[in-house]
Length: 77
Image (tube, rainbow, N blue to C red; front, side):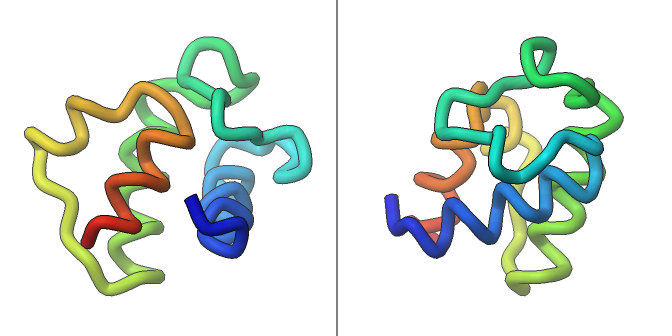
């Protein structure tokens, strides 16, 4: 994973879940990371799509278990 991509995604996730971006490592996950729940996941995906101009399908979204998973998915697009 590119460090710049992780930092960008961590900043987007921090905006929607309220956790400090510096605390969001590749293993950050919904239900474990404060504020990251199913509603925050939808907001996170929308923020990524808007910010990066990509589309994440429902099937792809269902495979995301961690911030690292999201970074790998986004990097592949």
